Amino acid sequence: MTGRTHLAVGAAAAMLAAGPAAGLTGLAVAAAGGAAGSVLPDLDVRDTAHPWRERLTRAGAAALLVGALVYDAVSGASLAREAMARGLGPLLLGAVGLVALACAARLSAHRSFSHSLLALAGFAAATYLVCPPLAPYLALGFATHLALDALTYRSLRLFWPLPHGFSARLCKTGGVVDACCLVAALAVIALSCWRALS
Image (cartoon, rainbow, N blue to C red; front, side, top):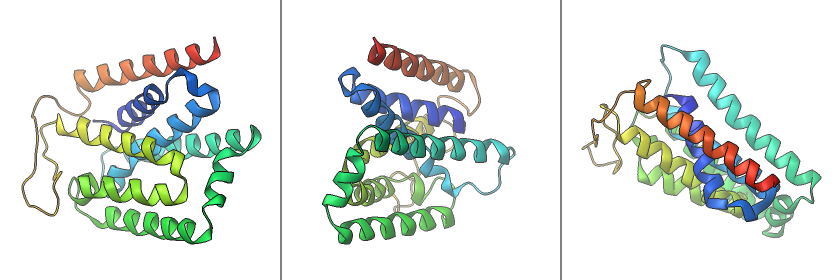
């Protein structure tokens, strides 16, 4: 699937999981976590036909994350308080873990380590050490990426380091299913925001 579809579906799934009771702050945090998780598997993409699209997708996820953290800080800084309450040790360990996992993902072949359940668990655990409320949304966004990519013709190694890949071979990246997933995700995001505001 395309990066924009991954981003939108990850954010939408996380917002659905948070629910309207989370309020705008909770939805912003959920969307940011889901979006960040949804782009992490594609850190292994180096040579692409549309490099600016990849950069734009990553920049969009980063902007959502920074925006949610700023919004959280303005509305009471609950995330920062919770992260600091855990102490410096877990914070540093989680940060080192995130950097190490990002490096490993960047250096891996496409759809291998970074598209595995092991990478999902690693990123979720490291995020939990840094910011526990963000971890389930990041994991959900990561999982939506794996699920969407599993629908395409190119296999992914979900159970890395085992050599066998998986592909449902149902659709192609940039095709009709990709577009439908993007539209559905944008509708869910709009509906979630509308319900939180009303």
